[in-house]
Amino acid sequence: MAPIPKNIIVTGAGGFIGPLLAARLLNDPGYRLILTDLVEPVIPAGVKYPQNATTMKGDITDPTFVSSLLAAARPLSAIFIFHGIMSSGSEADWDLSLRVNLNSVQELLLALRSTYPGVRVIYSSSQAVFGQPLPAAKVTDDVTPTPEGTYGAHKLMNETFINDMHRRGFIDAFSLRFPTVSVRPGRPTNAASSFLSGMVREPMKGEECVVPLKDRAFKSYLTSPNTLQENLIRVLNMDSSKLPKHIRHINMPGISVSIQELMDALAKYGGEDKLQYIKEETDPNLERIIRSWAPELDTTTPLKLGFVKDESADSLVKQYIDSLKSRYIPHEFRWK
Image (cartoon, rainbow, N blue to C red):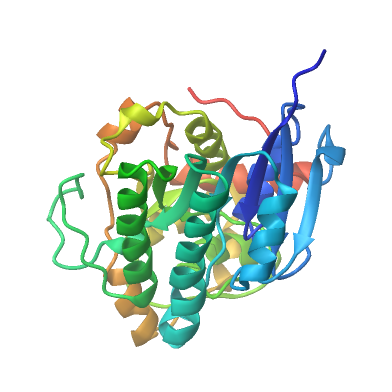
């Protein structure tokens, strides 16, 4: 007799990371997914077990919808909390970020405590929890987060809430501080970091991308979609005891990449002619946000925990351009 599939909820499943995760899990008969978002999520094409996915359109800030969502997942094995307003959008509308990024997450966690005590929770935090002053070297595990934007502040507040809920045994949680994901397919987003995908993605379509600062030496902390997908699978089944009960965050592994390195890789794999579509125009508001973020984090702890990371700017850009040639992003990958 085949084992009963594990029920997993993915919130924010109409975005990019939710479908990326779903594409991997739906190739395994051991999982049943409930994909939810404010817009109707799409079940990824080409997966082996699309029948193991259910979509639920609804407002995660509505307690009635949350109750119906949790009931549909009975018995729930895990939840990935991906929904939220992105960095620029949060800065532009503090009240919206408060409602979606903070209040809805905490109300969801409290509902989980009541309905599925001890359930595995994977929360998508961000490197945006860090702000100035930052060390001259890499940001290590003992650097105190000092966010300089609403997005990072609300992420950090949720991390503290999750730490205490886990410590008390209400949930079994990990908070993952994501690097910027590059290169994302699809359309630009309202994230301050959107240009870090756009400066490859848009030129490959013959469209312009505006880089909001004139500093090609500026570095960002990045991960590829493939690597993030693999790391999400690894944390799903990670031994909870690998982290202290009151410290549940993980600085997810990434690589420090400059704007010039991304441009060089675009020219190498996409063609020198693509560089004409990159325009450098200073946007003081966006530049303030992205300069407050850490350009590099120490990866010693996440690598010891069994996570993986990319090799270089070349690998990030080549991965995306290869996906265009094959017309899909593969669901499983290998690392050297």
